[in-house]
Length: 78
Length: 178
Image 1 (cartoon, each protein chain N blue to C red):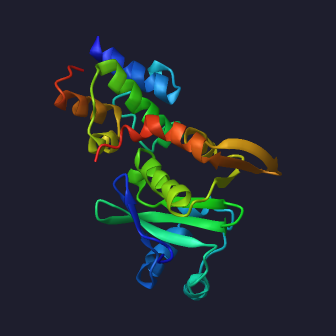
Image 2 (image 1 turned 45 degrees about the horizontal axis):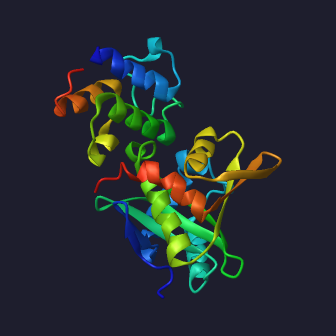
């Protein structure tokens, strides 16, 4: 299920339990979300959803909710 | 070669630091967000900044640029302790706008700076000094291919050679699609 895949990708990339991944989890709000984790997250999302994101979308991916919004632009149901 | 050379790659423009940049850079450098990660945390006055900038002129052991992204100045990149004969240098950088600090943009700036060091200046070894408690910087350096070489008290030392850099850059640079 795509919704779970987004949550799982964030949990894996940020090294957090899935229970900590909420829609409001945002860039800059936790120390785990640093530049390295951000790129691990992007690689994970591209791999899971078989998508190639624009660099501006990579930069704009600033929360879980925003990630879903961006992925939907690529016709991904999540 | 003009010193320091202007450079553009990965969506980043490195413009040599000019007198017109000084006040903005001083404000960035004195902000707590930036200063807390600096080895020297002295508050920089306007006079100190002018004296420092005057000392940079003609000094080919140090180079400072303002990094621009999307026509916006976003931070400072530097190469200091340049030893042209030994091939060693200490890179440094910071990014001021919060929205660019923790994503792909720092890698773009670092790669541009590394390319200047390795390709334009033909240096062979980049040296990093990181506070032991700066986990984000440690992870960033290791992701860029740096290897830990030792420590002195709470300061950790890292080094990067060209082959390790190229190998580490490839999986990240594929996301830079400008």
